[in-house]
Picture 1: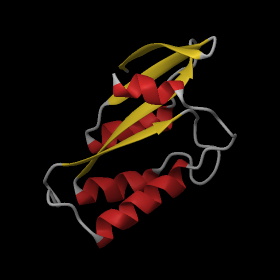
Picture 2: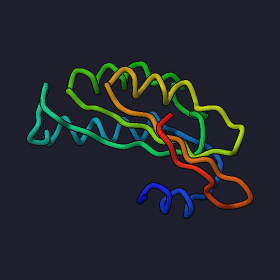
Picture 3: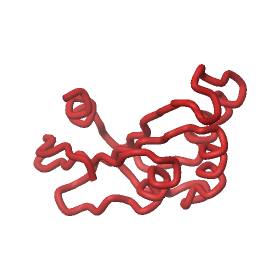
Picture 4: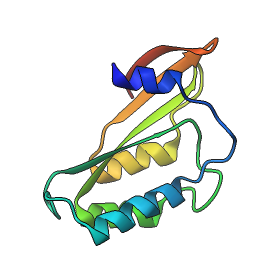
Length: 116
């Protein structure tokens, strides 16, 4: 599975600003809408190994803009065996009709990738 390979090459440098990443994505969508357009089928996948530690952590504005654009955001979380799925990621996927995925890592390798 492609996500498993990506998760195995992931490392953290500390700090997670999902708001900044989403704002850049939404800006691009507004400037150059993809063929699906509002009400169409536009999808993106946001993969992170952390909960938001910078910016507005609940991503309320970004969720609303994505919904208005008809953008479905699927979220993937790479975390430890007992690390819960971050609520802001779950809310983002739910608000935009996206799916949630989680890769669990133990002893430096991915042990499981599954829908969350």
